Image (cartoon, rainbow, N blue to C red; front, side, top):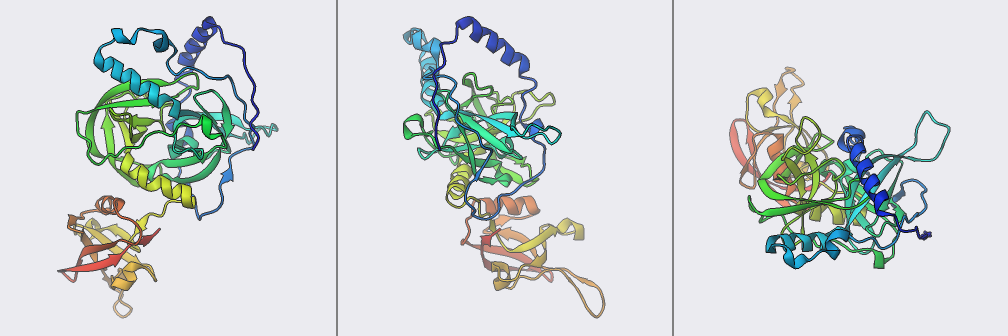
Length: 394
């Protein structure tokens, strides 16, 4: 891929001020979640990366400063907490990118892809992998990524995990232009600790909002309808356009991907959610390596056991050749002689965790990997039994 480099003349401050006002005026129009819809698309197989459109790199300017005002200000006049916040922003913002989603109009004779949505993302590694939300790029015919130095690159879709609202893009930028974001863990977070949300919502400059962790182990719904478990709730403002940007701890490490807000108006109302870093650290390496996320599965189709006045998950069918079949789990079937329905096994526990519905089962499987052996507690003919099952992929 060839990167075409041009140099733009300096932009006068008055123009920047006008551009800023224009961006604010358009903010209500540039939304992500409402623009992308709610249908699910999965990435199947480990096919080579597909090119999203045929864009050429078009740099807009060179060497912007992440914090141009702060760079000239007397930082020593700030309080210690303010200085710490400034340092986190200046270290992390070069890792945050602006993503433009492109689509081609079906009603137009113009074959050129047009911008149809925007979002944020961050640099994963020095190979050019960019992590963002799946809903930012869902349904795109093309995408482009603008780095902190304002150079713009065409993007390839490496893979996506719609159930986790995670997608990985790739750009062919030189290593010298890439600054991967330090990664942390979400396993030992505490309610009340400070967090920092960085985004690049309009491609003009980075934004920072601060807050605290308001809650842990929240459950939000992905675009496929499957729950995302372990989500981080924060009061740091997460506005449309910031989706896909990083949520950082006080050491500037990734602890989540900003993904959703809870607000009737569509603007931040103090309740934002982030996909936890531990899920990101499990999913992204698989997407980079295989182009898809192998979700651990027992090998059964299920139904809510409340339909038969039981607590748990009713097994409807057992897939041949799976760990469930090897373990001898039984599905629901009809007696060929009497025509009566014979209920299958009901899963009521997994490795000691109580399973009352399919959400509990999905959550219990979230922390497992393909090839792990789990112990299921099942209810069969009114009696409880324990069965060991090796997890496969789905």
